[in-house]
Amino acid sequence: MNELLKETSERLLMVIGEAKDRFNTISESEWSAKTAPEKWSRKEVLGHLIDSAANNHLRFVQAQFAEDIYTGIGYEQNFFVSSQKYTEGNTAELISLWYSYNRHLTNVIRHINPDKLNISCHIGSSEPVLFSFVITDYVSHLEHHLAQILK
Image (cartoon, rainbow, N blue to C red; front, side, top):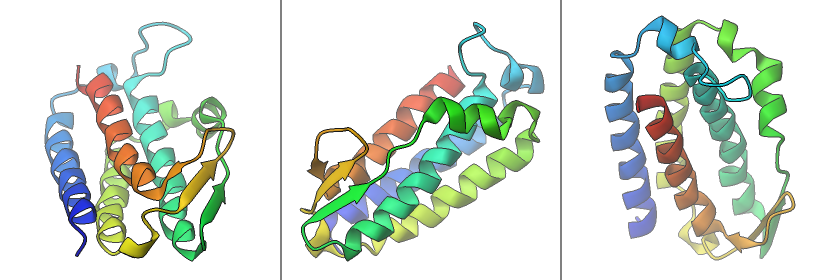
């Protein structure tokens, strides 16, 4: 197994396990509270992380079919969060979905074809990056938002 993929999948597994344990210390009112009207609640941040998992899942699989360039669509994160009404969702179910989806992504990452890591990825209007960056940045992005939830 490729070392980058092994380390990234193990890091993701560790991060989600630790976060899931700490989620139990957050009350329902804290999950739903907003610090400002234009800011996301913790529950909405978690919903954003579910959206991120879904979007990156497709990228992780589809990029492996590309020869040298993968062009993926971006997504309007605020619309995704608001349209799915995460604030009205059951917190335990959202946590379970987020955790299960990321457990699955650890397996997907672990089994990515290492020969595809240097494919150039054009996602939305962003500058092209290597597929390897997309994979590792997914975990960094997750950690960034988990810090917001767990603060």
